[in-house]
Length: 351
Image (tube, rainbow, N blue to C red; front, top):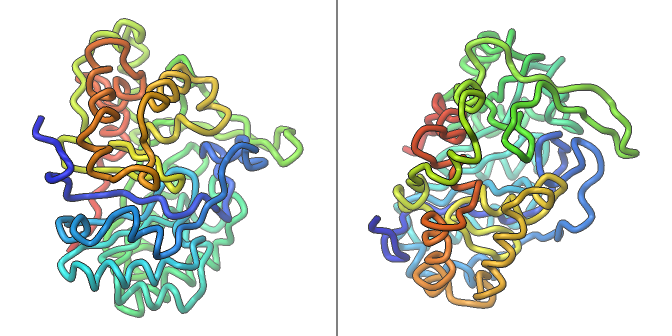
């Protein structure tokens, strides 16, 4: 694998751990209820971005994707300033953003239309269903923001995570996206209906802020079911995790991830094992913390090149031949590939 700091071309940045929503399968909250207590609440400013990346690194990049694991980039009031600096530093750079669309100033969406290559809006249904997953968001606000961005010349993508409660609306939402001017409509076959032992669960209880059950989320029942579900049910998972060949999608595609806390990973799927109820009950949580304790992994404490080309990333690669991380096996294993199967119909516009 020819992966090093100098070969990285795409980077995913989490510039905020704040979010207006409370999605039940997001690690930042308690199944749709309260935000987890140990999550550091962070918004980067422009100087943080400059310090983390540096001019030379930005100039070698092809794509910067503002997304992240715990927050929505539109919660960061410095987003436009950051995008402006990036485009001035590297005029050929493509910039993408993922947002639930329910937050952000109207003027911000107009400005982003002139600065970025695309914005992906996570809209999981229509007016009567989107809020069941994207809790605390307002449908009319989302559509208004998307229209502002599109009408100002922006290229918009509609990401639709399919559940049982919205699977009947996929075609309607696709037609609506076209009428509004979205350039892409992506169907995402969710891979999150598993417990910590990688067993399929038939529902997720959605909780309120007091920890009481509000309602249930169910996986889709038709062609929108993630194909990994069937494969996992027929597989000895512990043996698979221990033996499957791991081929890291992110390293193979010269990608990198930096969390808002400054920690650097090949991908955000390792970062989401740091904070949250599911994360802390997972076998990988202790392993990752133990690996991180042996070297600096934070871009605000150590040079980014030294992190990527040094001991930290070597430890991750070496784990594949020994006491491997379950997350790596399940996301980038040879046979079961939850990430690939979830995003098989996702093709972001980058031009």
